Amino acid sequence: DLLFNNLATGLYLVAAISELAAPATFAATARWAYPVALIFLIADLICLVLDLGDPLRFHHMLRVFKPNSPMSLGTWCLVVFSLPATLAAALSLLPNGEMTLEWVRRAVLVLGLLPALACAAYKGVLLSTNAQPGWKDARWLGGYLTNAALVVGCAEMLALSVVTGQASAAVTLRSALELLLVLNLIPLGLLIANLWPTLVRTFTRTQLACTGMVTLGAGTLIPLGLLLVGDNSLLMLGAVGLILLGNLVIRFVLIKIPQAFSCP
Image (cartoon, rainbow, N blue to C red):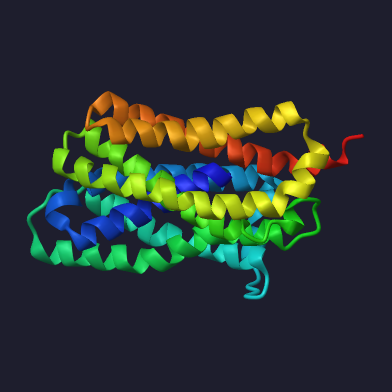
């Protein structure tokens, strides 16, 4: 759920902002990005429904709206975001050429930016405001997941630009991803500082070392090195794969912290 959420919202945000800022460079890649983002959003929603105690009662979450509840607000943000995400994906599949249709599509992209950002942020806020061990101390979880959404979104856009042969877009996205990986170390470090007392009590030194090697080494430093080496397509795709792996491991550890803490 956490990974699919970031894959969907991050890809939409990066694609929409890139296309709105420089359509000549990114429009061709972005048209592939919106359908992919919608697929990840649907996967996220399926995970959320299946995670309920009674999946058939998921519609009851939409019966009320509580702005002061991260869960209620997050649910409605997902509902609102799903509308422009679906429209953007559908309009991207239509042929180019009609000016009116292009203006409609750009308006849809703008309308989806705020709910996409809210969807990327709410899960971290939700987890950090409950009483579960570890999560209740993770005050930087919302900030980290929001920033990480941009990282994985940029990585996805880079992979799409490489696969679709958009060399000019790939050059710019590679530089942006290098910068985002470095900046992401700040919220990641602050989040680890929040969680460190819990981590050292719930995991062995070996487990922490292995997790650190995967998340920091394989998920950040090695991809950064691969991106800095050059514009080789295989290297860029390899960097994207490692970034996604590192993000998956981080989220796996985050979700498992309360269970690990409760084990004797």
